[in-house]
Image (tube, rainbow, N blue to C red; front, side):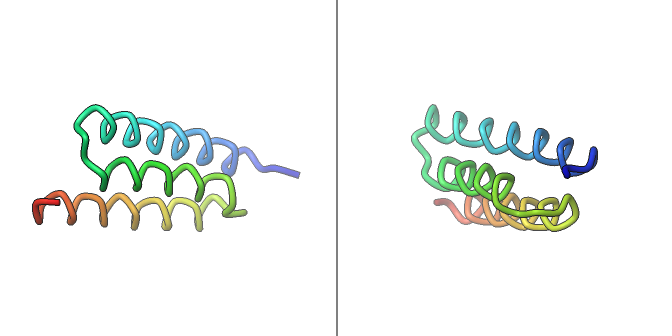
Length: 71
């Protein structure tokens, strides 16, 4: 049903997303807070470990770019 790599990727990316959400909430910054929610949602809805990793890495890159631009 679920592979070990999928479960591990889901655990890791869900934790990273939760961390980004908490960081954004404490800093009162919307890009990490919204990005954290999106990373958690990706970890729930994407069905493969590789797809999940690529999507989450793209979201984290987007968060980093937005923060560098001053949002």
